[in-house]
Length: 112
Ligand SMILES: Cc1cc2nc3c(=O)[nH]c(=O)nc-3n(C[C@H](O)[C@H](O)[C@H](O)COP(=O)(O)OP(=O)(O)OC[C@H]3O[C@@H](n4cnc5c(N)ncnc54)[C@H](O)[C@@H]3O)c2cc1C
Image (cartoon, rainbow, N blue to C red; front, side, top):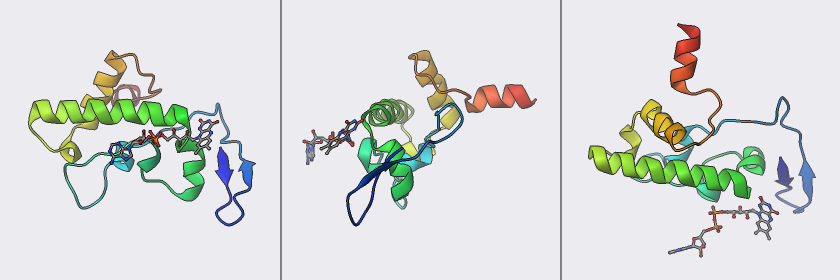
């Protein structure tokens, strides 16, 4: 993670641990209090600390793909983006060759 100190602007790096992978939950793309707005990239909701990992270009690209896909699915289903079934979104992203690691579906299958 590439974190910029809020007062000094000084950058410092933190190892996220494990294999370096982390999830970005769909809810972090959905502004609270409004059903049909979705954001991606640097606008997603995260703490200052977590932003050290999410505001970089690669996460911006993948959250952009997720947001665009979610908007298309919501439009097709005529439902607000906030009401979208996350498992359906994950399935569509995997079909489009996005790597999600473990999805809701594979987790359910593993723990069944
Ligand atoms: C100086 C600097 C160096 C960086 N270096 C790195 C790096 O080395 N590696 C890395 O991974 N990340 C780096 N980053 C971070 C990363 O580049 C950004 O966080 C990321 O590009 C943000 O992507 P985004 O799509 O959320 O927003 P942006 O890339 O800012 O895209 C938003 C777009 O929306 C447009 N826009 C704004 N308002 C409107 C409007 N009203 N109507 C239509 N369009 C509008 C803007 O013109 C812009 O094109 C750096 C950032 C900065 C500022």
